[in-house]
Image (cartoon, rainbow, N blue to C red; front, side, top):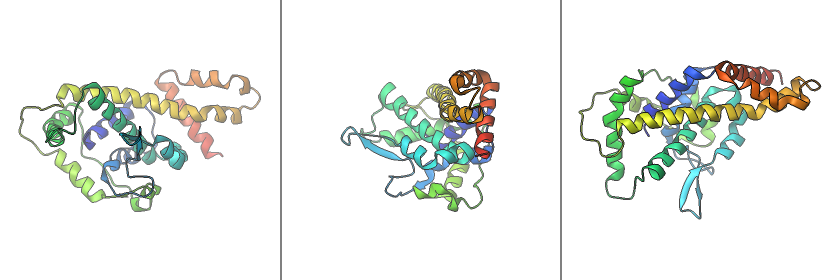
Length: 245
């Protein structure tokens, strides 16, 4: 999946959820693919082997362990996490649902060509703009513990997505599939966002209302999650609570 799709999904999330710094969120959502090398945790995608090395997945637990508190306070780290979620969804989408085979000769090359062909379609449909900003002193961010990042190359790649490409026959990944995946990924990320914030809501409520809310804090959390206004209230409460502790 190309970075412009990650950016499109992130822009759609911004319309539905509350974030403190959209620019940092969007950069986090695409910088994963700019990773070059990595340390003992693997690489920028936090990939780990499973099933005796037959498959790879993403070490979400390790990422939350390393950056969970930052995810709650800094949208750069939340965007990065949501990129990993989207990549895991995409692997399931193309490998399991549509049975794409990366082993066959030229299949990877031809899939990437599909991305180039449909880039202009998704850019126009979702009104995507090349407005990505590299955060000041990004090289000092804790994310650099897991990988170095070629931010200059990333910005060049982003600019290239907006260049016109001749329409050609699609090999595998069609415009309809792109639309389908973007919608499904957005819905899943909204749910993942809620689950992540909900994980800190109960201790937050218990700390804020030790007498009144202790016995019924879970019910209070569920009420706050109803509707978009509930999500905004949820995020605001968590961040205010974290700021006071």
